[in-house]
Image (cartoon, rainbow, N blue to C red):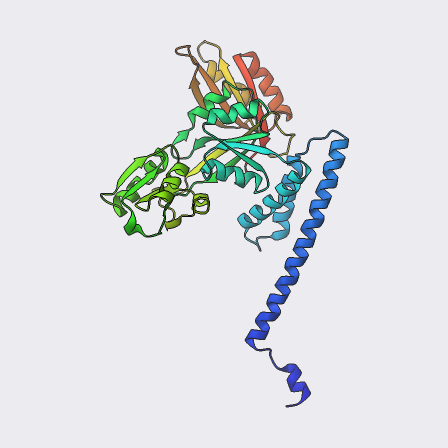
Length: 369
């Protein structure tokens, strides 16, 4: 065979595979070097912000980053994965400027814990709380930087303990996250034949009732404090299975029997990030209010008309009874826009004049999902 024939010969499959893997190693090294450089840049920004007493979190800048990435990507890399990767990178770099503590409704591996990690990544410090009210208390008193609390579920509706806590504690909403809720059946072995009882929080049990009836007929269920507690019980008793989050599988060293056993797809819980200050305008924001209306005919209609006249789009309205005052209610309003937007500011000022009470709960970046 001539030298020319040797040069034109296609490489064998193992050689081609090794060549591609070598290139992947080179790319990984380049990515790591760039990540280290990005982290160094973020720390320099943190030093400059500290010198000028500027806020560490700039939601407008983060939104611009994601918009630029989506435009450059043009759908080539799966966008949910792209968002997840860069959310972790951005959060890690931001937290390098100052570590933060986040309170959530525990124990570890609840959906609240999962939402907190989704929002802040793996680099924050997380503190488990026994109740939603405890999350508010810790945040109001400054013992943590932020808290994350569920506020509504697409199937079950409003989380009343969260709404009631907004009526008691002085905190601001700083962000929101819509988390897709998928319930997994988990146990020690991963074998459905080992299951003698299914344990979980009342909501997952209710949301998986038809699946359990069809696939585990005759198997008893037991309600416990949380899906994470159920996972701990299943980790200790091989006859038990838990309905829990994907995080619980890793946290409590369990195996997945069946994924996604919820009766209805599209189950989503909206979480709110609470802190002591709302962030600056991002350009893609929501604002939330807690208002009490004057006791007169047409009070709610008049209030909504004021907002409509200013071109304000309400995304949610929820009422809660005023404790100790029969027949009186407070209303939670969510609207598109930031309090710094002229129409929002003017609308809120006019609305305030016709209310018995008025509390701005915060303006914050809207969830991307």
